[in-house]
Amino acid sequence: MNSNTNISPETMFTETDIGRRNRFVENIFKAFFFLMTCLMILPLLLIIGYLFYKALPVLSLDFLFTNPKDNMRAGGVWAPFLGTIYLVVVSLLVAAPIGVFAAVYLSEYARDNWFTRIVNLAVVNLAGVPSIVHALFGVGAFVLFARLGESILAASLTLAIMTLPVIIASTTEALKAVPMSFREACWNMGATRWQTIRRIVLPNSISGILTGVILQVSRAAGETAPIMFTGAVFFKPIVEGNPFAYNITEQCMALSLHLYTISTQVPDVIEGIPYGTAIVLVGSVLLVNAAAIVLRIYLRTRKKW
Amino acid sequence: MNNQKNKTGKKAPFLETLIESFIRLCGISSIIFVFGIFFFVFKEGAGFLFGGLDIWEFLTSEEWYPTSLNNKRYGTFALILGTFSVTALAMLIAVPFGLGAAIFVSEFCSPKLRETFKIVIELLAAIPSVVWGFIGLTVMNQLIIAVFNAPIGLTMLNGGIMLALMSVPIIVSIAEDALKAVPDSYREAAEALGATRWQVIYRVLLPAAKNGLLAAVLLGAARSIGETMAVLMATGHSVNIPSGPLSWIRTLTATIAAELGEVAQGDEHYQVLFIIGILLFTITFVVNLIADLVIKGIRQS
Image (cartoon, rainbow over all chains, first blue to last red; front, side, top):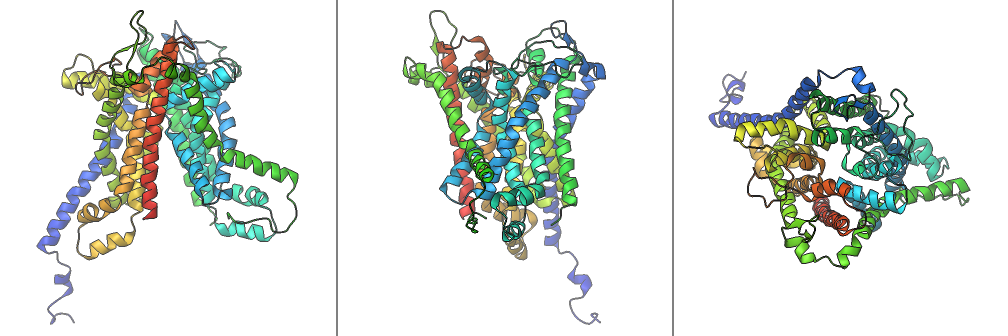
């Protein structure tokens, strides 16, 4: 039917020279940006692979459950591993309620005015304060002023304040995602604001809140500088196999500080041990993060709205 | 939601009033903590800051001899230079990669690939700084010795590469948000005029998103300035005016981390470390404030 017109579908969709050149240029740029993205990601895989390879000789379940021995030149990571768990759990107990309620304030109570802007700016700045300044704050406020001394409690409080913005940011996001109509329906039934938050807003955003809490855990587990002078010590052996071996008013070892110590301060460590410690630390942090990602994807698929 | 009030006229029960005041208290907690951080760091350093420290010398002298017996000098110029030079080097590496990756993820990627990349970037951001330091100490150290034939690989270059890898995830995620915020109608209009994808990016998207991209770079730089463990372990840790990428340097953060454990509480050296803390707090506060104003500028336009 088109055979007697000048523009047939065939010629219409044939590429012109300029079109071909443009597509060529575009593909080059696409490949270039793809390469840049890969160059950013490859190091991660290579490095973790290398660490794992070097750590292989020492990695075993025993490594996790024996104390460092021989002035930290041999043995496992039990004391630092348990210390990190203590620090993370105590800081989580402090940071989670404050962070979640701060997010509730920002998303449900705060009006759009200058004061809210200052609160938001404070959250951004709290996230931007260097970790070593948090350490100085911890020394000044918790160790000296509050007379907690160098203890798990002081270190955890420092970590809690440092990781607060993580929880606030993701919880605010989760609360904002709950549709306004849900709240309006609840208010129309005569519910008060707090009842609405408790029965409607929080249950519907629990996945996002959990993601934030999990990310806080991974952040707190990896930090070194804030705990160096507030509660973590280079060496402190504890009873192997007893999960309640620490007291929160005492000092503890921590995985991150332990890695720093054995790789810079202690000579003649068995070669695999620092690598093993690094793998335990990276492994736990990445596992926790992966849990957050899986949870997020799983809950997104069963979202009700 | 903000203007809703309990209009039934009934008084809210006691428990609810209590909870609401707790929520308000938590809401302003960030302000309290930011002021608290400044106050307590300032309090520990104030005695020497106003009584004896020559502030001009503190900022401009390169002589850092805090433990010398008869010639104590507290000049941080070399440390400030160290911080800024390693940050600049890190940004030099991280900005092209970060922006390139952001452009690829936001403009060229299929949705499935985008999800994968974002997850990997999230994991990259999760690696603790002490592990980056350890990698600098072991892997990168050997690499630099082998490639540049240097005597020691713990240099500014090493620290810069580690900081670049650490700040790239921040740059990518914020830059990608900025590119996504450009309305689709801009892209469609440009494509309707026959522009190729690259022309759209170069002529339309980058100019339109430039504030967000600038904020991404600023926040990445703020992260690098404040980073402690990686630079402490990877840069050689010697007070030195940096002369090139292969020179040893020492930063403000690393100085605090290395020396705070060795000083007696309350003496001059101890207080100077807290004054360095105030300096760091001020620098990152200003950079974050600028980034926030830049982002706010986009929202208004």
